[in-house]
Amino acid sequence: MSKLLVVAFNESDVSAGAGLAAALGLPYDVLDAVGSHAVADALAPAIAGALGGYSHVAAVSSMRSKDVMARVAGIVDGAMVTDVIAAQSATVFQRPIVAGTMIETVEVLGSPTVLTFRPAGFKGSAEVGSRTPVTADAGQARRVGANERQGGRPDLTQAKVVVSGGRPLKDAATFESVIGGLADALGGAAGATRAAVDSGIAPNELQVGQTGKIVAPDLYIAAGISGSTQHMAGIKDSKVIVAINKDPDAPIFEFADYGLVADLYEAIPALLAAIGK
Amino acid sequence: MIILVPVKRVVDPYARVKPLADGSGIDTSGVKFEINPFDEIALEEAVRHKERDPNITVLAVSIGASECEEQLRKALAMGADRAILVETAEVYDSLGVAVELKAVAQAENVDVILMGKQATDDDNNQAAQMLAAKLGWPQATFAAKVEFAGRTAKVTRETDAGEETLELDLPAVITADLRLNEPRYIALPGIIKARSKPLDRRAPSAPAQSKIRRLKVEATPPRAAGRKVGSIDELVTELKNKGVLA
Ligand SMILES: Cc1cc2nc3c(=O)[nH]c(=O)nc-3n(C[C@@H](O)[C@H](O)[C@H](O)COP(=O)(O)OP(=O)(O)OC[C@H]3O[C@@H](n4cnc5c(N)ncnc54)[C@H](O)[C@@H]3O)c2cc1C
Ligand SMILES: Cc1cc2nc3c(=O)[nH]c(=O)nc-3n(C[C@H](O)[C@H](O)[C@H](O)COP(=O)(O)OP(=O)(O)OC[C@H]3O[C@@H](n4cnc5c(N)ncnc54)[C@H](O)[C@@H]3O)c2cc1C
Image 1 (cartoon, helix red, strand yellow):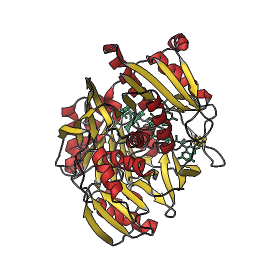
Image 2 (tube, each protein chain N blue to C red; image 1 turned 180 degrees about the horizontal axis):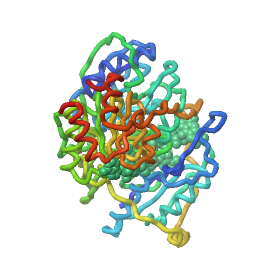
Image 3 (cartoon, rainbow over the protein chains, first blue to last red; image 1 turned 45 degrees about the vertical axis):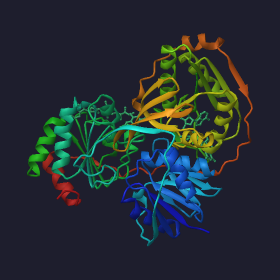
Image 4 (cartoon, each protein chain N blue to C red; image 1 turned 60 degrees about the vertical axis):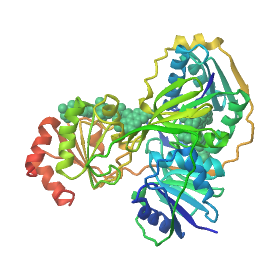
C-alpha cells in the first residue's frame, strides 16, 4: 500500500507534510514528535515500529531529523534520500549535492522510502489523515544537559526576513546590536557565516549554509559576507538577496539581486534611518 | 581502547566542480581529492585523545578504489596507528557504507567510531546513524566536544536550537561537527614518513546493493543576474517595489 507517514518535530511540519504528500500523490498521516527530547537510539525504533502500512516516511530537514531519520533507515534497511527539494514521482527525487552547486536526480529502488525534505519546494496542500503521538522508551544515551536558546526572534528556517553577518562583526556584542538590531527592526531572524560562528561572534545555531541551516526568506540581507560556495548553498532559495560589502569584487555580488558597496557600520544605521527605525 | 575513524576520499571542497557533459556524474578531471573535511576533524579528535591516553589506538578505514590510499596515508601522517582499505571499484550508498563499516568494526573489535557528520560531496549525513542502528550502539551526532571517562563518553552536541550534552556507554558512534577542533596541518614530508605504518587491504564483506540509483547530475540553475545600487535610498525603493520591505 502506498501511503506517507510524516514525522513532525515542529508544529509547522504538519502543513509542510501536506505539500510533500501532494507532490508524491499519496495520502498522509502524522506521527507527532513535537517537543520530544528522546535520544535518537530511543526515538528511531519507536518510529520504525510505526511504519506498518506505509511506503514512505518523511521529515522536514533539520539537525534533529537527520539524527533520527537516518537511524530509522538503518533499522528498516530503507532507501534514504536527504534534503529532497522536488519530487518527479513517488520514487524519483531531486536533491542538491556538492554544496548546492549541482542537483542530483535519484531513484529509490527499495522500500520503505525514507526522506528528509526542504519545505520551500513543496507548496501543495492535502488533508491530513490521522495524527498519533510517538512514544519512545528510555534510550541507551542519556541526555544530561542542554543549553538551547529560545530567542524572541522568528525561526531562521521559516522567517520572511533574515539578516546575516560575517567575519567583520568583531564580537558577540557588536553582532547582536548591529545584525540583531536590523533583524528586529525588520521583524526577521539573525543568521551568520561559519567564520562568524567559529570565532565566537555568533552562536552555532545561527550558522547558515551547506553544513548549517537552509533559509528561504523573501528578503535575505548579507552584511560583511564574502559569498563562499558553502554559505550560498544555504540561501539560494531566498526571493531577494541584498549584499552589503565594502569590497566591490566580493563574490557575493555575483549572486545578490541588489549589491551595495559600503562599510556595513555606516550602511546599516543609514538603512535603519531610511526605513524610519 | 580502539577508535575507528572512517575516512572518505572527496573532491577538494574549495574546488569549483561541474557535472559531466552527459549528466552521468561529476567531472573530477584535474580536481584534487582530499579527506572529507568532517572526517579530518574526527581524525584530529581521535589523535588528540590518543596523545593524552597511550592506551588508545587509532584505526583509519576507507572504502573505495586504490586511490583512497592517498587519504589513508595522510590519516597515518596525522597520527593514526594503522589503516585499512576496503578495496572496491563499486559505488556503495550510505547503507552499503554502513554495512562495510560494521564488518570492520566487528572484525577489529573497536570501542568507538568517530566519523564525519556528512561527506561534503554527496552531503548525505546518513552513514553514521545507519551504522549505529546496525550495531545497536548509542549515537551522538554533531559533536562539538568529546570527553572519555573510563567506558563512558560525554559529548556536547550542536542542535537546531543550541547545544545538548549526552552520556553514552561505550561502544558508541560519534560524528564530528565543525567546531570540534581545528585539524593540524600535515606537510608532504610527514606523509612520506608515515609510509612505514601498516596499511591492510581487504575485500568488501558484501557486494554493493544500492537502494538509491543516481539518474542524472546537472548544474544548479544560476540566479538571475542582479545589480549594484548606488545608495541606501535606491536600495529601499527597489525593495519596496519588490514588495519585500513594508
Ligand atoms: C560516479 C558515482 C556514482 C554514484 N552513484 C550513486 C548511486 O547510484 N547511488 C548512491 O546512493 N550514491 C551514489 N554515489 C554516491 C555514493 O557513493 C556516496 O558516497 C554514498 O551514498 C555514501 O554517502 P555519503 O558519503 O554521502 O555519506 P554521508 O552519510 O554523508 O557520510 C558520512 C560519513 O560516512 C563515512 N563514509 C562515507 N563514505 C565512506 C567511504 N567510502 N569510506 C569511508 N567512510 C565513508 C565518512 O566518515 C563520512 O563522513 C555515486 C558517487 C559517484 C562518485
Ligand atoms: C566543510 C566546510 C563546510 C562549511 N560550511 C559552511 C556553512 O555552512 N556556512 C558558511 O557560512 N560557511 C561554511 N564554510 C566556510 C566558508 O568556506 C567560508 O570560509 C565562510 O563562509 C566565510 O565567512 P565570511 O563571509 O564571514 O568571511 P570572509 O570570507 O572573511 O568574508 C568577509 C567579508 O566581509 C567584507 N568586509 C570586511 N569588513 C567589512 C565592513 N566593515 N563592511 C562591509 N564588508 C566588510 C570583506 O570584504 C569580505 O568579503 C564551510 C567550509 C568548509 C570547508
